[in-house]
Structure formats: structure tokens, C-alpha cells
Image 1 (spheres, rainbow, N blue to C red):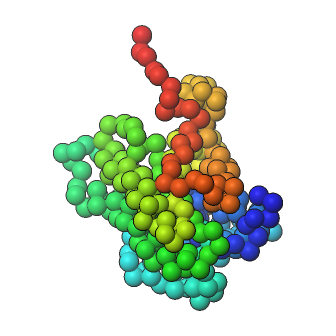
Image 2: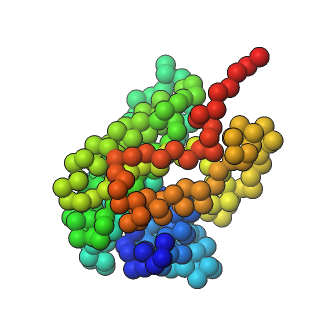
Image 3: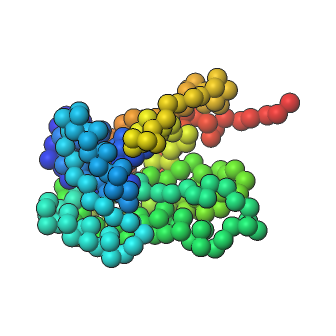
Length: 260
């Protein structure tokens, strides 16, 4: 990005593992000051060590993004250390329970998924706003999911939260336009994150030919695919783009499937 991100302040929620870890690596490689937050202390320490081996330095601040007080404390720490924020990436999310029937899904489990996946981005944007207003070409990027547009059975909480986050994206884009804050989303499809987990949870991809052929591009996605798009959307090169959602799924959601 031609040194665009040098010394930019980037905050990535859920940045210790999976897509978030890939995002942290990508922005750190661009010489940005990257701050990751995560509820998992062990994963955060592992991410610091993993990136340190690549001679990349980031900061880790533990936080449960569903808790208002913790989000306030997070943003206060960012303000104390950096004084501003140029990019907020709302990536933190949970899927559990992955599947449970409507009749058997406890309200508490449904609410928990919404609290992290939808309330969290709202809280982070709310309390990051004064920092973003001091940033250079400030942007918010929400990581949603193709589950916002299509479903498998019994995935109520995750689907509802990601659909809500898609709507929150264009709502914030219009509402924050007077402050010149752009807001966009990336909607990932099947992204293989096994190698991007903390030690003890890392797994090697085991994709069948059928898995690959579900995607018109012929493979399953990886965090780098999301990171490359994030680098573009949060840069001045995307200065005329706001309120949009970019689907990155290898073409899976536009492929018609017939069962003969």
C-alpha cells in the first residue's frame, strides 16, 4: 500500500486467532501500530510470540467486547498510549452453539452470540468514535459472514447477528459520514483458520476434492484472502467506498447447486 499504513493505529478485535490473527499480521507487515484485543489471554500471548518470530511487534489488550465497561477501558488504554485511532476492525465473534434446534436453543445462548457478534461492534464503534475523529482518513471495517445471506439449519444466533451487523454497517456509514468516517464490511465464506490458532488448537487443513470444488475458484479460503481486501478497504485507495459489504467466498454463494 505504498507505505500508507506506516505509523497508522489499527485496532483489531478478536485478533489473537483465525482471521483476526491474519489481519494483525498483514497490517503489521505494512508497518502499522497494531493493537489486538481478545478474551483469550493465552491466545493473545501466543499471537505476540508468533508474530515476534516474524520480527513483527503488536500490542495485546485483553477485552470482552460484549461488556460495556471493558470496551470503555480498552479505548481509554488506546487513547493513553496512542491518542487516536485510524482503523477499527470489528472481527471478534463466536459461533457456539454452532447448531441447535429452535425448540432446544436456550435464550441465554442466543443472547450470548448476539452480545459478542452484534453488541460488541456497536460498543466498540461507540467508544472508539472520539479516537477515530482524531485519526487520518478513519475507517471502520466489520467482519460479517455469508451466513448473513444464506443459512444451514439451526444456526439462529450466528445468522441473526451477522445479518444485523450487515445492517449496522450501512447505518453507521450514513450516520458517521459527517465525521468523514467510512464504514464497510467484509463477508467471508469458508475460511480455513486451523493453522492460525493458538498452540494446542492448531490443525492442518484436511479438504477433500469435493470441498474445493464447491468453490468456483477451486479452493477453500484463508485469512490472507480477507487481509488483502481489508488492506484495500481501509486505505485511501478505497476513499469512495462506504456502506458496502464485500463478499469473499471463492464464488460459493453465486454457484447454483442442483441435485439430480
